Length: 570
Image (tube, rainbow, N blue to C red; front, side, top):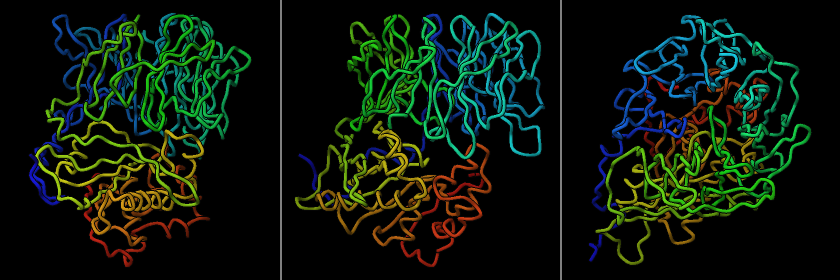
């Protein structure tokens, strides 16, 4: 029998130290000749990223030296900057920005140090012995210059530019026969989830490009994840229909493979997203998001038939097919993010690499409930509701729990329902949690994503307030015990909610943004025009920036709030 105690007072098996003791994070996986490789970031090694595989005894084996950090700062957020081909690792090193080749105990530098170059999104051109990469040049005094380059593997070479002129580049992808290169580009003020263009050009014997052909994309269409099939056909993801769906290009036209109100990619904040791979001659294994979570599907791209594959994860990334085996990164409300191997014929699966070994009784796990709630202008918004849950405690009949509203960062991003000690820390103590995917979040189509255009600090705050109101009306939260918290962009939403609204009783901002104009003027190139779309253009819209910046209105802040800010936070 459970002990009766007030909500918010329950003893919990999860200590603050448990939450703070982070496990590894998984940044990418590779499958080379049927063998698994992955890149993991280790908080116990000051955030060092390491390329790893299993040795013949099934033990983890690092493939880069102990002083090597397999990361990049291209676009500041980086992403995949590693590649494994025939057991050879190619990777950027965070410390000097150079590219290296590692094979066994031998490590060879490929690009010179001290030039201000950064590299990401690598492709190996075996025919011409080149490495193709996105290069970001910080050698000049002004804004960094982004290009695509080819790097000669037979000499230390900073790279020869093969295409330039756009503000940003991503996803260079070489066709299987080496005759064509596809890539993405876009310009300020767009972000890659606003508008990008997909190009294809022929590649000559030296690795230089012919005249490019526009495949798809515009300032109003976000194209992502180009990939060549083994037969040399080009596939990609586009939101031209209003949803990020899959397409095939036949050399003249693009064809939608499976039109549906679902998203077949994550927002391209980082390099190297992989939400689909090829299976046999005419099928794709793909991941896609619907409001009840991520799914894995088997798509016959000729007929458009999509069959859902049963598997244990509700969040999915980095899909790789090798024979009848699917390797991917996934997690669920009861299992932390892991590398999972799924047999596509039998459906059997196993966890290969886990990010955490923390053990928690399932009776202490609050299972999230996807909710859709009414918000402003007759619209609805989305969230995950986590009820209080403790295997040993319950509240008295009729008592309503205190509620913590969580606001994710980005803001053009989304929360998920994966096992999180940070949320369970509260739910095991008798708090309810609602994690809000406010208007502007990804996963619900382009129109939903664009709700935040010109409205950051308004729509996100409205949706967080209305999520709490909805749960109060449903009898799932105590109206007198409502709090809000968030980090980065979510910290801004938290501060705005407490400064400009009179609804919450307390809040917590983790490295939040308080001055929008300062953010716009001091941020890096990748995001330097992001606020043009979210707030307005400077200097003409300075009044809007001031009106929405909490730091300009501290006289209106009367609600207790905890600020957690690091000296080096940017």
